[in-house]
Length: 221
Image (cartoon, rainbow, N blue to C red; front, side, top):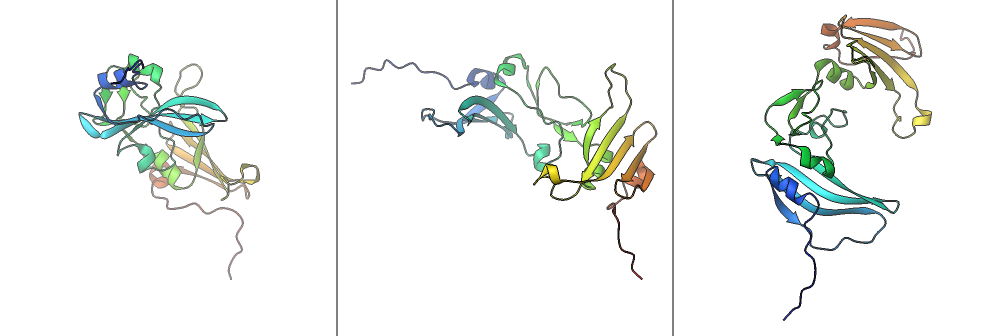
């Protein structure tokens, strides 16, 4: 016979994820470790309406401090499809779950469309073809002025390309290309920072580009 005086606590987010239509597929019954670093998975979930939509609730410790995170995933997660591209797949915290009405997972939204703030918006994201081409050419967006401080549309973006090795040592990276996207005019101006040469292309020509050559090259006889 066992005298059980323990208190049974539900894992974090249990009631809200159940309400949103998720079902648990893994519950960690081991107690939380007292380590100072690493991750501890509390639970894993799948959406009843579409088991390809999953969620992991886990604790993470860095430098002695811990926090609980939600990691939602699906086959159409842009991080899976587009690698390191910064498409706005939403992040949700435990304290937001109670305010979300339902899970959106059917259909796509545009890259320019913000996630539905009243729901758990896990729809796929359709990349903008101009931005997708800029990423393919190795540039990354540094600033997006499509909405200024007054809320007016200006439709301007600024992109940069750095020499290889940028991720290894940001301090030694060299700016190679600079680009200005003007959506009102439908043009992209690309500047070679080293030589100063520049070209302005319409979106139709930009989308046909395979690469951009830049820098000083020795002419062949």
